[in-house]
Length: 173
Image (cartoon, rainbow, N blue to C red; front, side):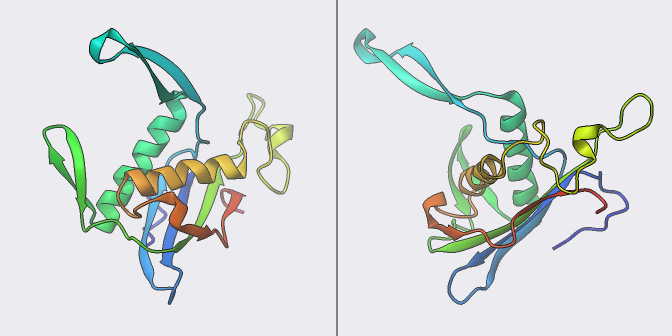
């Protein structure tokens, strides 16, 4: 459900996840903060059993990881998802993740940057948030889909069959 806007920062995303058939709402949440794109994967070497070198892919980009964690925290709180833990490791969710096809709707909202002279940056005075510092729509969506999966709302992001009504918008437009 959508929260009151007065106490919420101007940048955010509103998310709704619906079952593909018959379209019932699985969950929706609002996450304040600046939306961030999915970071790149960086290979890191470590020693495995027997001293063998093992390559692990680790997501780079401190902003993308912290934004994903913020989305997961908002989703858990507003959708009533509780992680089931064994020690520090999450081994499941209550309720369990939705196992069927879904659609995802989202509005990624961005604040226009203001210069020291009090005017909006030229790259942020466009009708839509397409400036280079905003990021690509598909990478914003990838980070959200990872949050939906890692946060336990959906079983796997391969279950997402579409994203109608997913937009990048300026705040207060």
